[in-house]
Image 1 (tube, rainbow, N blue to C red):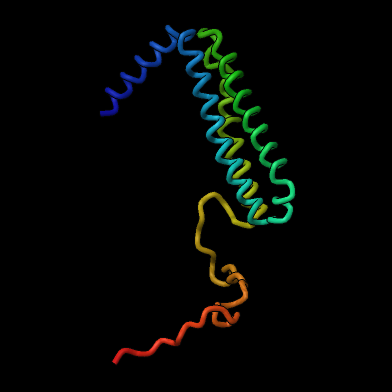
Image 2 (image 1 turned 90 degrees about the horizontal axis):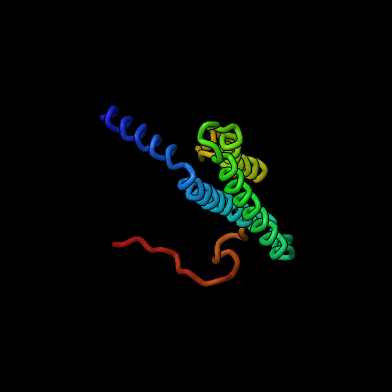
Length: 161
């Protein structure tokens, strides 16, 4: 099973290398879209985190934060697509150091930002795990139940006979 897949992969790679100039724009466009998606999802998550952790500050600077996030996502995605396009100029120079560095940066940036934001927010690592005994988060103090706050009157439950 593995050998036929490997043969197909080698032949596909050879076809791309022979027609690199035609594939160059498509690969750069894919890098642009990938950068938009990965960095856009990270920016959206960070904006949501900011709106939850600092609501008054986020409300006041909401448009600035969204504008900065959009600009940063666009700059990094366009830069990644353009540098990928430049790195694929000459098939004799592949694998190109520029392409490898740009691809690594485009993958590492959203992951690093997510991990750093989770640490700052006190959420933990990438994979959520149960806290060890004694380290659980205390429940939120939302003012108690509606019954304690004088809200809707809910009659106590009676056992069924």
